[in-house]
Image (cartoon, rainbow, N blue to C red; front, top):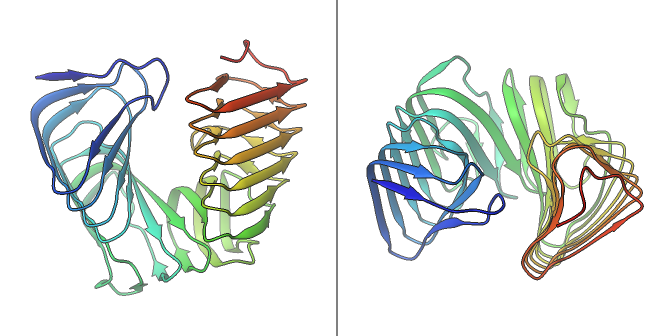
Length: 310
């Protein structure tokens, strides 16, 4: 069968599997109308995707005690692995696997390389991994990209790895200044200039830095080249003079988050969502566009855009 999701903008629709729901999709096509789409598994949900053709990109979050199994899919998409979940990919291509690293995490890790990953396991039973509740397994997967989401309070050392993205989480009312993070960097021995955590990259290549704020956290951003920036909860972001190249997503304010951006240039979309507030002033949007969705508020002041805000 084919399941089609009409979307007017990316991430308009979601597949949401919660509580004790069981979802099985086999020998089918998922078509998201040419735009990125959300997939969320939470609680004790069980999801099985066998021989599924995905026409477009999926951004998925696997939370709590959810169990997610994917076998024989052409386009996996990106999966955020958290909580006490179990995530297993087999014979799947084009995967971006996000490893959430909570404040309890103490990690010394090296990601495998190569066009095909014959076998990979990440959990608390592996050497150098502590404070993580979930399990990630890969069997015979190709075009795999690695990513981490370290929280404030975590202690993470990565070595001899090629990393597609690092998405920094700022949680529990954190307050921080962010500068000096630049995409497409090769690090021989780099300690991230963040006072709220230890993040050490040794002989490691990184394509994208991204920043995500939760609950009541606050951040100021300057002097960076980042791939994605977003505010959630009741967090607040103040930015001045940085570049968002879109290699990690877009520039946004969601839930009840507030973002003030001044003298910022982006090569992606700028968007307010849900009840978020985004003020974008004296900057430029070089590609993508500016939009407000849900009950949000977007204010664009003296900025260059490819088209009027929507």
